[in-house]
Length: 293
Image 1 (tube, helix red, strand yellow):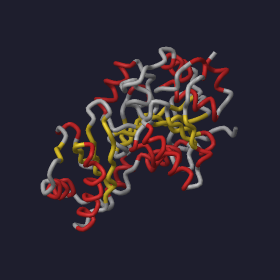
Image 2: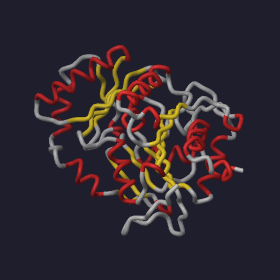
Image 3: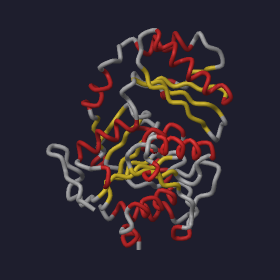
Image 4: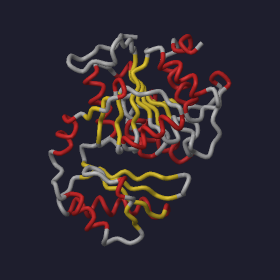
């Protein structure tokens, strides 16, 4: 495996010996807050791996800064080098515990996103029934978030795409499922703001490549990067629907070889959550087995 290069002006943590980049979703991927059981040794093994400074760790999540910090403390997750948050609309470096926002990412996604975009989105949503706005702390200039009944999710997403395009807004609409509440979740973002494009920016800035980058996720809003040219891991606790969609999309795009489906059995673990992430990392990078001992 070729060593990762560090881009000038964007150093990793001081003294970093990071040889590969792990970009992982949090909820129901690293965080065991789904319905399936967790292998108790998984998160301690992940912490051990990150502590060895062999991994540059990036959390890719719908959570904001406050909720990411809460998750790290509550679930004893390793501290990351960066966070892609608010469903891909914000990037922070988090070296040495300091959150530093990447303003170049904001500039990129602002280009085709007018100041009145949130108000225009709200006006269109208000014309539709059975869609509820999420609390204010889940809203940002670049992310408008709603809930709806699960049977209506696909229809609402399709209708919103058409309505917002008609009124001149280029958007990225992410529909996903909250397994705990059994609700549909809708996030409306600038067209340029995707988790995958944010991951690409981090890779470019910090000198990582496709062969030394691994991405992990569990849900429908992770599908774009799970089915891309990146080495991807779908954890075993993903729903059958997401698993089938991931396989179909990856094969359709000629990326079937870049999608690993965790199934359990690695070091006696069940493949759910962090166990699945570690299993996928060992699949792509077999030498990490020695780092986990």
